[in-house]
Image 1 (tube, one colour):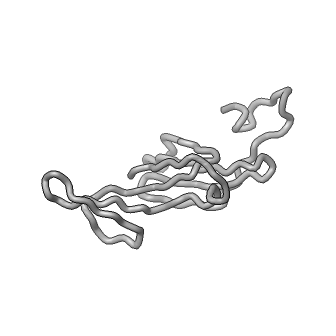
Image 2: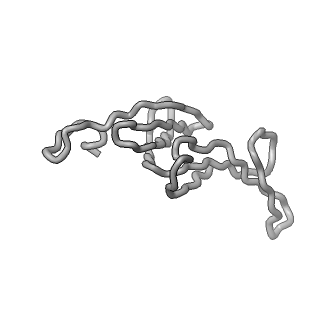
Length: 115
């Protein structure tokens, strides 16, 4: 963490990692921020949980394709949706509401965050 935030210097590496956001989007109390570090050739996504205007949790993903989905009982959305029947017969939906763009040009692990 100290290396990534630039708060410590390392003998092995004289360069600090710079976070330059390219896009930021919010879904309720979650804020997603995506960027790319050209010097290191690394794409990154931060997922921040915000409570009462303060960041209470940070998750960061490097060179990972991130998809955010919303689970619910339907509703209106312009996002792609797929529905399935549950054992009780009611319909649930999984709505894809956001996908990282910067990792699409190379083969990277995928991750789904559920809201």
